[in-house]
Length: 260
Image (cartoon, rainbow, N blue to C red; front, side):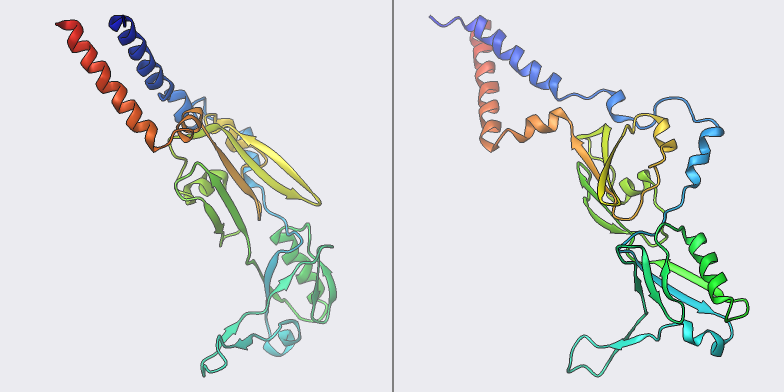
């Protein structure tokens, strides 16, 4: 004889445990929950990126047109089709090689790897200043990209135009973490030289914004792990929903008979 009362209790406990395991507390969801940072901790927020191998940069020199002409590569005209009469101008760019160098007109091999934008500007200004009076240097990094993967609304690779992006801005570009993202375990993967460096962020703590890695570098990858509820739900298939619904219906029927 089936003990309906005992069976009903077991089903109720099962449903309750499933519901409890899927719940999240505010401490798992809310960003930056602790005390504000001090003035001394703000210093790290002024960090600048440095140029690396495989960076694609645009450099233009302003000043007297005739004097600066040898230092500016001409824009390249190209068309997307051999049958097209229209052509676009492609601005000249320089690719930093594995040793951090570029080949620059007149100056020859120039090392920009490891320099910030300000340092590279001053370096070129001093070098070209030997030939041109008061040259105006404009440098721009064209392929500053970051990648955000995992539990965000819009994962993907993003190109940054202003050469400066913070961890929180990058997550904002990706549409923020979903409710299933682990906010205390966000991973950063960064290439430094010939090795990869891994950093973990805890977005529930305000101290995250004082991390030396809070401002991202080109080609950084952020990975947001799913929380346990998401992992458990991933193990279910469409049939499990039907089964759970059937179990609920069965529990209701049993309860009706017990009442009678």
